[in-house]
Image (cartoon, rainbow, N blue to C red; front, side, top):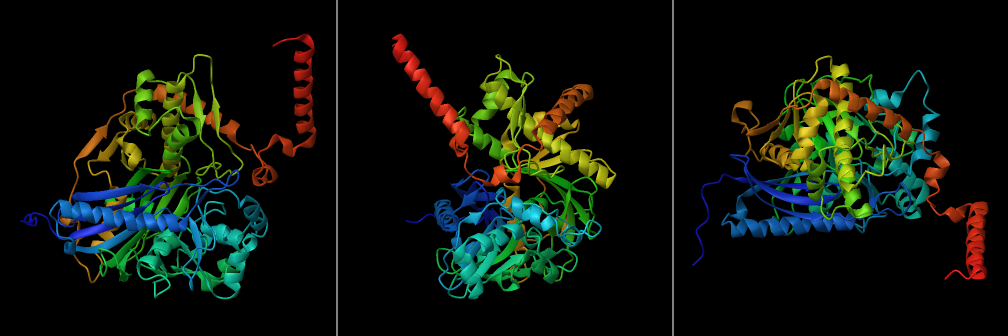
Length: 553
């Protein structure tokens, strides 16, 4: 006899959280915001050349289907009725660019990830065309001209990939960030899929006017991108279309936010001046500035925070973006092999409790806020014979905290009112050594909610609150509050300042490291330099000959 269905939970809302390193599907109780179940799949990153970062759009899509089905199986094992899932929200890695064929549904190239640096020469050429006294790109978009954002990635694809060029000329090409690629496929794909995005993802393309909330013709002409490629822009909370097929067929997709905006909503930062910092692949500090665009004078971005309904006002945010945070831990695991799992870094760092004067600048994709220097590269300095992998692990965690300090300082200067504490979320916040380090380096308390899945929660809230769904109230008195874990600073401010000043000195040494030519050659081989290659080969021959003549075994 089948077990009785549980009746102690409310109506359910699902959330796809498609990040840079993994895809997850999570199911929440709309009444209590309790996370009921989830499933996760890691995403493979490809590095075809130095500075290039790609992912397979079809692998991303299949991972979403897999996560949905597996999570639904877990729901059934919990005796929860799948028919109670009333909406699905989507949150995603921002800026990552996909171009696909609307007839066949096939991607025309791999997804070019936000971290990718191949467009540096494109950025330099375009920057020469912007008048010094009229940076219309930044005025309209709130963004600096950078490899980070989607427009230059689309430009590169149009210039370098014949499939993309031909499809664009024939009117078959569609562009989208990951949210658009997923919504189009989940709502039918080539058989009537909905080609749309939301205001938060659109605001990260460098093609979107954040004042008018529309694609900007002048920007599209500047970057040479046909407007026919672009998705329709919608609010973050409305029904975009219905799921086609699968266990959740017929369920509306009704929430969509870029991951950092979703975290802002999940942390319930709905008031001016409220801020959160998310520790994921990168690190992103967002401060709600309400209905006014605040332009930074200290290297931060102005971006769309959220728009929770077609007729609801848009709220803006100031953002400090750090490219490498969790990605540094993954690098230590996959490239250096000094840890076997991401969780192991906490144990190593705890063993020594210090970096012993070792400093790590993880500028793998240049430096983002507040420097915006694409020529910077990663360095480790302060090494001695005493340095071991535990010190490196500690230095890596410190690097995440120092980068957060830099963007928090910039935000305090722009806003004029220093934050009294920092609200945090993201996978790395499970690391207690990191959280304590962060409080020590900022000299303010760090506050972490008991609910770990804040980004997915934000997408679920937007989906459940959409007109026509209405299962999740966003009224302040109805919102569930979370138990908070608090980390207080445990070192004196003077010690914190000394460590921070040495970090800043190391940052200066990482800058101006590469030229455009060397960063785009993609050929790390020493033999690309013939004289050097000849010298190395000659030296090896001479050494082998000497050993042979002298009879050394």
